Length: 382
Image 1 (cartoon, rainbow, N blue to C red):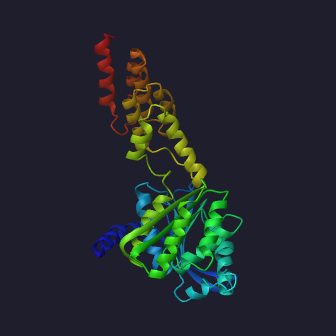
Image 2 (spheres, one colour):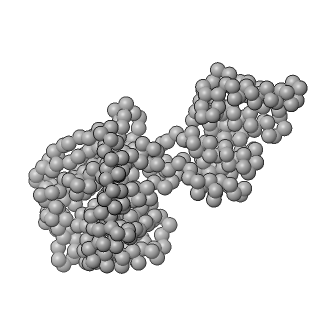
Image 3 (cartoon, rainbow, N blue to C red):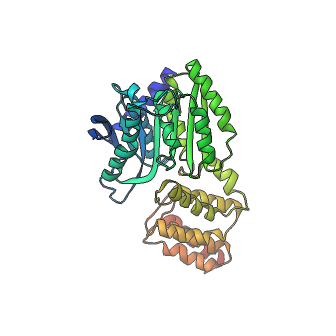
C-alpha cells in the first residue's frame, strides 16, 4: 500500500507544479475573523479567457487540498474529467469549532453555524465573483468535515451537486436525513461514500448502515457510489477514494470508453452519431461546460460505423466534424466514405481529392487521401 501511495505522489507532484496555486487570506463577516485558503487554477487559465470551470471545495484543506488538487490536475490533463478550480480551506486550528453541532437537533450551532454560512454565503460567492466558474460544484471532507458537508444537502436550494464523503463521522439522525434528502431530490446529484476494512470501527459500522439505506434509493436523479476498500485504514482510504469519487461524478464527461463502444455503439439499434451528439449535450446540461467533441470520440464513432456498416451515419458525422474540426481532413474523409459506400464512387473520389490543402489530422494526410482517390480511379477507370 505504501509503495502505491508513493507512486501516486510521484505522479501527482509534477502535475501540481504545472498548475497555478494561490494562497489567500479571506476576511469573513460571518466568522468575524480571517481564514487561510488555497486555490488551484487550471493550466492556462489566464489564456483561456472564454472558458468556465467547475469548483471543488475541499474541507480540511491543510491535508486534503494537495491530493484532491493533484488528482484533478492529473485526470483533467488526460481529459477524463474537466479542468476545475480547487479551493481548500485550512482548518488545522479551528476544525472542531467549525463542525460543531448542537446535542438536541444535531444541526450546526455556534461557530459551526457561522462556518456553514461562511462557506455557502461568503466563500463560494467570492470565488464565483473572482474567477470564471461553471454552475457545478463539489464538496469534499473527511470524518468530521465529511459529516458537516452533508448539512448542505439538507438545504432547499442546491449549493453543491457533488458530495464526497471520506469516512464520515456521522452525527445522530444524519443517515436518515441524507437518505430522505437524496430520495426527495429534484435536482441531479452525485453522492460518494467510502470506508475501509481497517477504518475506525464505530465509523465503519454507521457508514455501512448508511450504505445499506442508500443502496435501495429510488431516484434516477441521484448517482450513488460506495467503496469499502480492502486493507485500508481511516487515513489510507483517502488516497484510494479521491480518484474514484471524482471519476464517478464525471462518467458522462469522460471519453467514449471500450465498454461504451462494445455495449452501446456496436448495437445496430443505436445511432452512433446521435449518441455522440447527445453525449456532449449531456456534458453541457450536467456540468455547464461547452466542450468541443474530442477527436478520439469522432474516431470511435467512425470505427463503430465501419463495424456496423451503417454508412448513412457518415453524412451527419461529416457535418459535425466540419463544425468541430474545420479546415482539417476529418469532415472530408467522412463525406468521402459516405459516397464511397452508398454507390457514388465518383463523388467519393472528388471528395478525397478535395482534401488537398487541408490540415492533416489523426491518420489522415495527403498521401492517404490521394491514394484512396487513386484506388477508386483505378477500380472504376475514371
